[in-house]
Image (cartoon, rainbow, N blue to C red; front, side, top):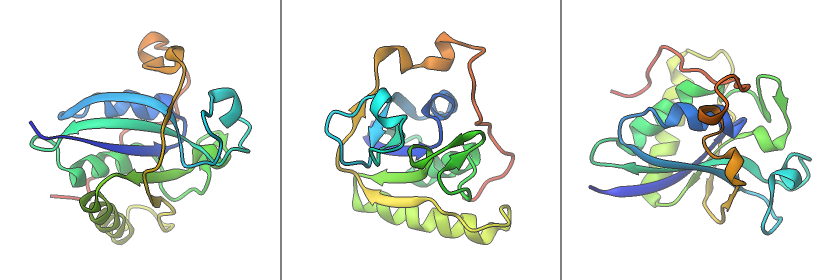
Length: 167
C-alpha cells in the first residue's frame, strides 16, 4: 500500500465526503477547514464566510489502487468546478473549489486534470478551481464527520456526473 493524503474542497463538505467515500482506493475521509487565516477555525467561524477557509475534505488514499489523477477525475465529476464560490444553493468563499496539494506530483496532476476538464467541452465555462499548497487543516466537529451517513435525508448538492477526463 502507498498511502497518500490530499485535501479537496468543492462546496459543502457533507455531500462531497459522502461520494468520495465510495471511490475504490479511498481509505479514509475527514471533513474540516483549510485555506484561511484563522487559527483553530470552527464551523461557526467558517460559515460566516469571513475566515478565508474552505469546507475541505482530507482524503487518504492508496495510490497503488487509485492514482491522484483518477481521484481528481472523480472530484471533478462530483461538483461544478466552473462556479466561483458556489455549489448549488451554497454561496460564499467557504464553498469554493480548491485543491490543496501535499506533493509536487499532486500539483502536476492537478494542473493536468484541470487542463483536461477545460478542453473536454463538458462545461461551457472555464474551471475556476484553485490549486494551492496545503498548509493547515482544522477538523470539524464529530457530528459533521460522515454527516450524510448519520443523516441520510440531509441536504447535498453533489452528485456524480456521467463523464470522465482521464483514461
